[in-house]
Length: 287
Image (cartoon, helix red, strand yellow):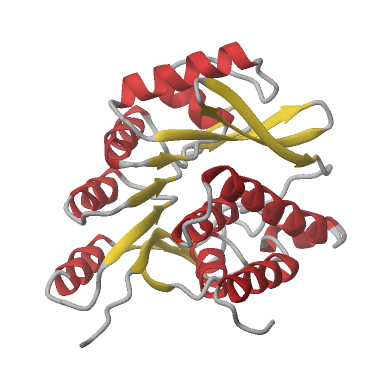
């Protein structure tokens, strides 16, 4: 009898330089021992900050052909998926159509829209509407504070109090017509940074020490870690904690490098080691 192992779908941008988005997700999920399939939503020569204006390649045609091919494969089954940076409304619509028909147990959507209080350059209200439509099919949603503000229509700051965050989470679910569990990233508490989510009717914060500086790709790494741990059937709270810890280790190592090198993404050495060690331990294999 042939045993078919499920795969994890990764749908986000591919930056040809650095450890970001799909590149980071592939490395992390490989450390989990997961089978993967990747839909690059856009191909970039570099990430969009720190290297000048990158050259880009749109991929809608490839997405249509790839998913059409996959639909005819009996041994390619998706249990889980991550959707990160999308870039265009047409791409968001393609992903909505494909993911809504894929019988996914877990669909984590990181609604990449902006950061530090601003929507990213090139996005507009029409694109925001397409992302709101896309997250209707999510089971998990990981907006940062800025993205939660955009999706909910509520003005928020990084250290917003619990009541405002709870209200914004509910407004986000209402306006997007989504039943997804919302995990808000980049939330400041005292000397720490982390995420908040609802647990038994209460807002729960999980975080780590805040390290000074701007670090690219933290959301990408968090999403990949979380889907990896959940795919191993780890308890949700523990999966969140270990994902936060993994992001912290990547930021900690990156912070030791000269600032000019931060634009290449996070140093994943310790994070990948910890993931591989945990995965082998779960399987009862030698580390």
